[in-house]
Image 1: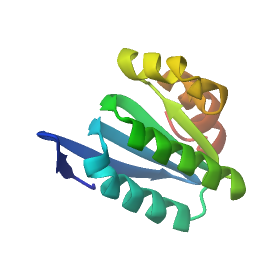
Image 2: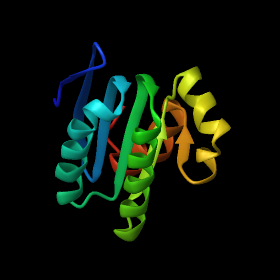
Image 3: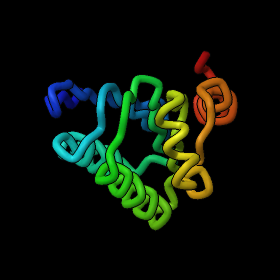
Length: 128
């Protein structure tokens, strides 16, 4: 877990590995002040050369423009390394932001059930 206090709110990142899938569970507010935690988690994950990196955003409350820029950087790095980057279970406000700035045209965005069906069952057949 990579906790970091920023803007009077705690952001936590927990990384889970399932075969060749790395899942980042992000909780709280993702702002410039706590990007270091996200960057450290990303670098550790990428060093393991996964096929898929998924970001569980169900508990991501809000995100600022600096963090969006970092996610775009992650997308570009993932593409250059043939890693599939997925965002799933976005809360309504984050989903609206992704839609407003057209991020879903670039990012793979889905609900948790689709992620489980399309990825966990494919890459981790024993996952339930």
